[in-house]
Length: 103
Image (cartoon, one colour):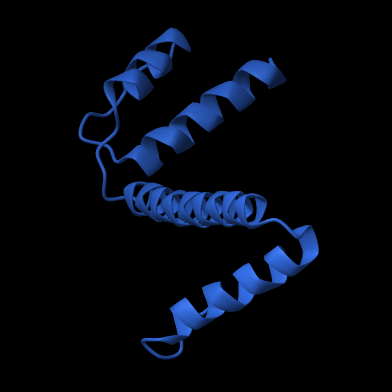
């Protein structure tokens, strides 16, 4: 439901409600379904926002985490450079794991 004008969102929801109500024939059930649809829409929005935040964090600017550093150490990686980005650290982890598989 894309909102093209200020009243479009409300009109779209009312149209949807009328369609749902016509199909189920019960006001309470129709309202329950609308409530669930609204929750689904909110969850899609939250998921998209989180995905965007993760993508921004993984674009090479964010610093590597302590957990990443500890994992590299557990893989016996020698000379781990400090101040690496998450992306650089992730690449080192992938390379270390590939070497372990190849060995």
